[in-house]
Length: 58
Image (cartoon, rainbow, N blue to C red):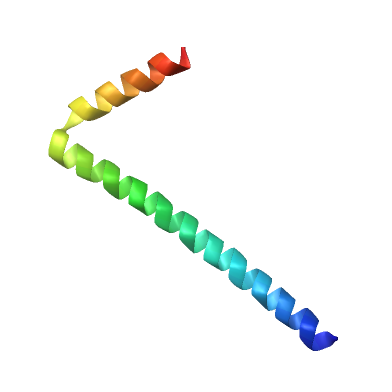
């Protein structure tokens, strides 16, 4: 029984670590995509996007 309990705890840690790595990767992809848009299109893209997002909120 102790072997099974160790395995499940180890797998839980591994799953949490994998989840954190995937979330960090997704955030880095979003930041990278935003950086590319800023570099290629400038502030016009972001001002239009922010204005549209605020319009949807109100």
